[in-house]
Structure formats: structure tokens, C-alpha cells
Amino acid sequence: MKTGRSFETVLVEQCAPTLAGMKPGSLFRFSARTLDEIRQASATWNQRLAPLGVRVMILKECPVTDACMIYVYRPTWLAKILHSEKNAAFLREEGYRAAHDIGLLAQLSVRLCMERDFPHEIGLFLGYPLEDVVGFIKNRGWNFTLSGYWKVYGDPAPARRRFAGYRACTASCMRRFAQGEPVTALVAA
Image 1 (cartoon, helix red, strand yellow):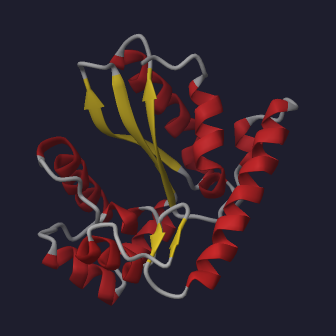
Image 2: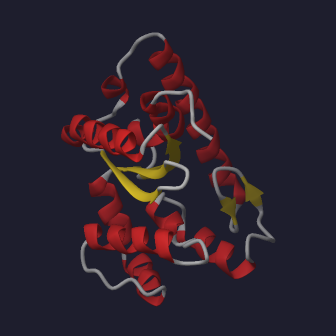
């Protein structure tokens, strides 16, 4: 199904907490008439947002549906997450071997494209707590304490507050964008 919404609209709607500096990464699916359109939009927005500390990359392309999985992230924040001792150990256990963030993202991309099962470790790349990523994998998506932006397996109170903050941020960014504020103005330093 092709979207009638622009890349920019979906970028703001799906990535507002990342743009606003509340979340290290966001992921969304976008379809267009051709994959080249999506590649061009991703490259354009990466060029515009990179000087502001936000990167845009395609993690997966589907030539059958002319759709892509777009990853929007803050490289500095992502590096801290991926290289924390516990997260790095978890990723090694999951078969990740790269020593740097771009290599880890390349491995994630391959897993999204080539593996039969969805790589649930993607939660770390989106800023989900390790406890919740591991809980989701071990429980196969069941037995969670709260479901929202992700499934929570620990104390639901902090996650509930984060979810509320993400919702408020998205509403604010969407309102500002609808009033004509450019996407770049929504990006927090």
C-alpha cells in the first residue's frame, strides 16, 4: 500500500521523540512509487539533519512493495547505548561482531533483510531498556507488565512516564509542523 503522506510528515509523526532529543532512535516503514524516491528522500533528510546530530538511513528495502524501513537516530547517544558493557555483551551473545556503530547497524540491516525471524535486539537500537528487550525475547512477547511503545517486563511506572512524554512530544511536534514549522526546527540540540 502506497502512502499518500509525505516523507516529512511520516518522519515527524513517527520520529518526534528522536528529533526532540528524548529517544536515541526511531524506525518507520515508508512506501512510495519507487524505491529511488525513498532513497532520495532519505539521503536528502540525512543531509539536512546530520549537522543537527540526527542521521537517517534505510535499514531494509522491499522491491516487491516499494517500501523501506527507515531508521532515524542520534549517533552519539546510540554509541553510548550499544557500547555499554551489558548491552555490548548482549549483542555479542546475539552474534554481533562489529566493533563500531556503523558495523553494528550494517549487521542489524542484514538481519532484517535475511533472517526468517525478526531481530528483536533492534529494541536496543531504539532505546528500549535491555531488561525489556531480553524479557520480550525470553517470553516471546507474553507476560509483560505494560505495553506501549514497547513491551515492558520490569517496573511499568518509569515506562509509563516515558510513553506519556513521547505522546506529548509527538502531539507538540505534529502541531508545530502542521502550523508550518520546518522539520529542522523540531530538532533539539
